Length: 107
Picture 1 (spheres, rainbow, N blue to C red):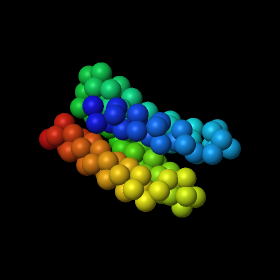
Picture 2: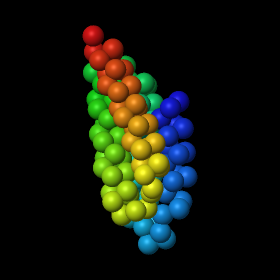
Picture 3: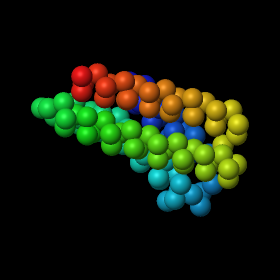
Picture 4: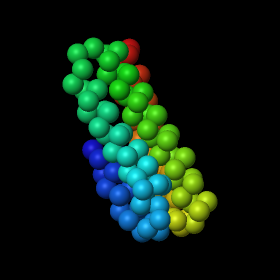
């Protein structure tokens, strides 16, 4: 659920980005964000732990991609320090939870 709510937060934040970023950074961030819960959900439908684990790896990759895009957004001053800190804190929590889930299904 946290990953789904995070998608909403990312969409909300990117709405304030410059129009010139609509098909660039905004699109990339929104796609990375939606990829996280989408891959978790798709992985849940798989029959084996190995398949589920593979989809969790993809979700994790998307989260790291989004983390770098958050960094770029801050460097370009599209987000302020408070938004930056909040987004990073939340993405790090999501990453930890994905890792914990991955470990729990493998063992």
